Amino acid sequence: MARLKTHDEALRQRLLHRAAATVFDRGTAALSLRQLATDAKTSTTAVYSLFGNKAGLLDSLYQEAVRLFVARLAAIRPTGDPAADVIHLGLAYREYAVANPHLYAILFADRSVHCPSDADRPREVTETYRPLVDAVRRGQQAGQFTSDSTPEVIALSVWGTAHGLVSLVLSGNEPPQLAVADCYERAMRALVTGWRPGEEEEAPRFTDVT
Image (cartoon, rainbow, N blue to C red; front, side, top):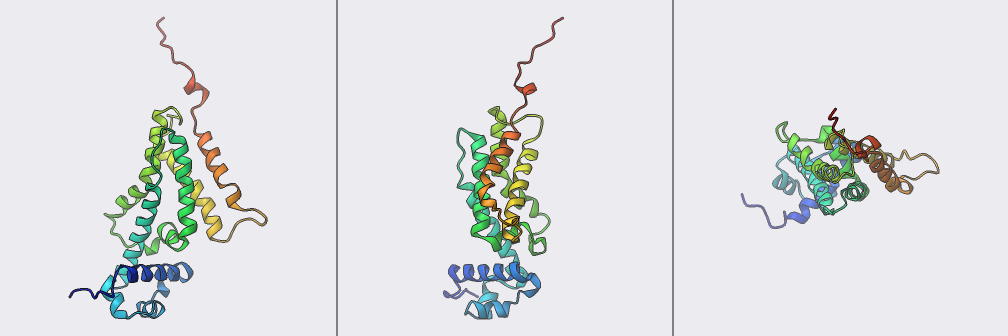
């Protein structure tokens, strides 16, 4: 059956964002297609037409979170300064989370919402992780990062720091009188500095010919 013209992308996006807010606030068990339709001032027929069922809605929710996150990171174009690119990717990570807290939670916090098959999950993770790993790899090639760890390990440390700081904000657990926004970029820069080559890597290597 052809989809009605009123069941368009604008309605789909509205339903996704309302569903994300419900899941973020009360969990997946609280997500009702009938209530979602009522909240969005549409019909359950529209919801079923667009998503099929609750599982389809949750899958679409996860895919939308991935899509927006990948698009935000892709907006950081590679430059001749990979270390700076890593910092900018960290800033973009925070911007995405603050602008889309409900989708961010679905993407990184509530694993029960993730509906892709086990075969699809590694591809999704790689897609979101690749820009940061690529920037670190370019930084290693340029001598900006140590070569005694893999690009994936260095990227993971950046990702983990960003995720931890962002999570403090979104969960309302920032310490009193302290704001993550005041130290976030500096933390990214300090982390990048910490992964620069050590003196033993910078020193010339001589071949022992004796």
